[in-house]
Length: 347
Image 1 (cartoon, helix red, strand yellow):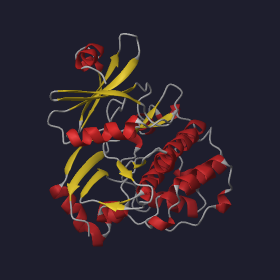
Image 2 (tube, one colour):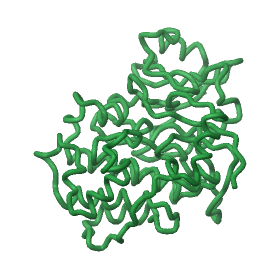
Image 3 (spheres, helix red, strand yellow):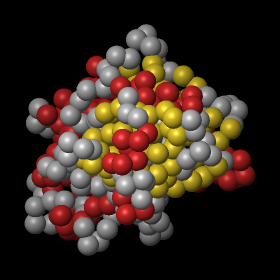
């Protein structure tokens, strides 16, 4: 546990010059301890919707997590109204900082992107199957993937995560939290979540990494949204049309096609049709042929369907939407995706 004075000195009293970014739950500052160690301090806003309960949730969840693809919690501080989390400093900002900036996209060649996909998959597998307790992240997105000095990915921000018991397979809630585009249909529509909810978000994230395009981006009417565009590119045997054009000199065709296929497999509407992360990691690590991957169905843009259009209006009327609240997001600016917290009654 850190004392407040130590963190004030480390961050130059939370000066704007040390601010790395700001989200819905508060601000993140870079700090340097007396021994020279660099840290990232998440300072929760005194009026933040993340109260003491959610703060304790994040501390308890992260405290015992030990994996190279997860951001490491170094400690915390509770002093009066001040609630602070202290993390390892991850120097290369967040994945979305590189993916969606036309000036930065070229810095992520195909080999780096493929290793980022594999690293995220390993981290998610650890959360789902190897950590004690098992954890559902619930807000996996490019803004919550930080890159270290060697561009290795680290999953961040466990403020919305949930613990799952060993025998538990599914849970539900009336408080819908997450980010548009990354939320699985069963979660956005009915408040149901499971490991397969994270798998869906992972699939969307993979498609963003391959294409260099945001899931929230608007595409030409004939290509549809990101998932539909990906499916059409794959089924028409034109994966390179979907691929980020800055990768044209560095890609491996089989890896691009496999990643495209895996992304669509993970982002299927039917939860049972999605793979587990152990299957995904196996496919990525063992050189499995794309011929062994199942045929995926054409994705349905559930937020745009006529049957669920009422959900969109309900989210618009009742949700509190803020900028991304990443625990230790080193990017400046933060992700342009929006977190949504809605009090709904699952149907």
